[in-house]
Image (cartoon, rainbow, N blue to C red; front, side, top):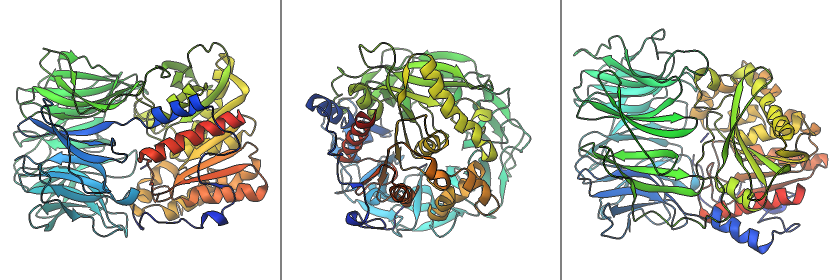
Length: 637
């Protein structure tokens, strides 16, 4: 899961003196050895660079980096001949960036003071004429879109007083906004060259689909019928170069585990009528994470297979594989294709490499090279590469995870199981400051993909919806039992950690099976789904109904699924961590559970990270968070 109501001096609910067990730094009860503390600080504080955007001429690249301590916007020459220039304003926490097609502007989203309610800003590539364009209302949220011609940027804006978001065209020079499509929560994908039609994604989680909206009439229709291959769920779409077709990344039918995301082509009449879809790309063993149509009749495809990125070039006509492009790191979260389609700047990461930028040739000649703007990596000494681990639930559901074992450790060890967010997220062999800091402190770490995770087909990602969530909960117990039986973990010395949905799942595990975990750390997780729905952003609440249940019709189910209703079962010490500006999973979710446990006499501490939202981005905060987590488990395991 990933809004704005206050400034960075926001004090949630109560001042520190009124919240027993609230920490202002790492617990003084149990301090780490100096060598471990230094390793934790270096690993957690390692800077990165991400979200690349190539200039139209391919000579420069804009990107986001936290080398200064918070995410900022920088621009540098691709050939490294000029040093990076910082373009964002003082204190602006940058989320993403996009270069205008004429090279005259950079549009970037800013998270004001850690808020999830982003603002749209623009700046010239030389740093001049920087200004705020949209999102001035602190309740509103701007969602990234794309440039439509030299001076117009299309995005989605949620006003904040309801669940809807409109597709809006923003004039960069005047700031004028024109609504292109409305009615429902619309996440803009693409606008036709003549601005007659808009492609936008709408619908709740797990059932999103792409609609074609007529700008003149406001009429919306599904690009793919519900009963067509890919019609039940399509994530993004764009108009083909000729304007006579639409391409969609959609979940294609297949047996469980093979019902993967692929590419579908849909013809479009001059009147805007979609025709029958044709499957262009499909693999039963991999999900299509992204794609780009190239002018030579090929398509660049970004696949994820076994949680690792595969970059391939296919023929657009029949999907035939032309070449696979080797990457120096296993995960590519972001990328920007050059205008001529011959090269790309890729955001790459691996277990020992924070996110960095690489220039990647796509013609099969030459190897990727790192850009000089990539921040230095941390000392690889204490870092380890995880091993992919496969196991099965009692009902036969295949499960996977990534196992991190400290060097020199053989046999059972004190172990922390860390659950990802989403729940549609996916554990991949990317740089994990938390996992690596725990390993540096001597812990074995296991990061599972329980049912409900993305990347394993549609049946798997929806296998925890509503009443079925109990099966996902059972995967928590299965995971612990598997690791103990395999001689990896030692019963009584297993901890649980998670962030966002993973924090919720951690609290579920601690309450459902009190003897399963010896300690837990729950970060920014829901403690009561009823109060979560009441307190989160309206658009997030609307999108989450299919995931958890309706806050009115399914109130009893939400209570059943909420650890807050059974906190008296919990016996293990729990550390709650939360950004004090989080309105995605409101900070009250951690505060209320912590206070309830304190009232019950259970050991619990609360760490509120000042000025942070749902995602912790400040370097000092990341180090503080990692130090607190390692200290907590070192104390209790």
